[in-house]
Image (cartoon, rainbow, N blue to C red; front, side, top):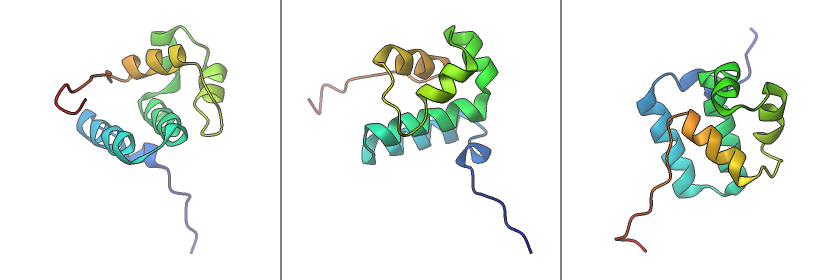
Length: 94
């Protein structure tokens, strides 16, 4: 019997699942986990599509969204917008 490597991107197949995953990482994770999660989401949606929407090249996206990278905020913001995410501050918790 052979097993395949688990890839979370295979399970991020709708907007609700993507939002739940990203919110869980934002709540519990650190910046490295957030970068990796955004990379998983971009992979699930399609790096080519994300590259077109952000104006970044696919190789640049793969490099920037690696868990060990430290991408610029502008890159993360562009990708986050391309995957349907947004940054929002809740005044009740500030």
